[in-house]
Image (cartoon, rainbow, N blue to C red; front, side, top):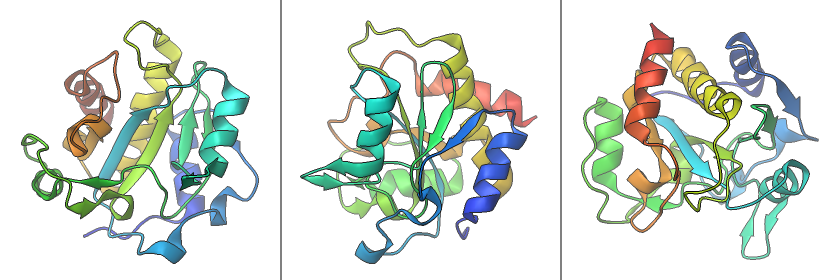
Length: 196
């Protein structure tokens, strides 16, 4: 059981990992906590945005859509590897997912197939949206991939988690394809190396 870190600790952890961080508006208090609990936290979830362009994507992830209010994550990772902080606390990013997957993340074991959506992931996961069309063709620049690795490792380092605490949306919620263009196994290997 891990209590969420403070917003200040989150910011410091990202910077200490060597990331360039942009603070967007009132990100420290911009959340969905009035809709349910935030925490205990158990892992980091990686997404792709299905968008182009940094400014528009950051605004979307901060403000949300008419059918899904923001924030839609905690940080947006752009193509240059900059992390834009848009919210902290409960965020509309994970949605409903598989309780067996959550148990595996907590135990830091291999993930089972995600075949049901019966557990509120917004409560349990930090979320990073990564700017990419998600079509399998849009490139993932090296700087962006390194930032995804660093951001994931930063959160794991604070909580004392290993790389198995980093999952993709596609491993949590049936039918979700993200992130597409690299494998989560590959990312977890990189996170594990960084945590050493």
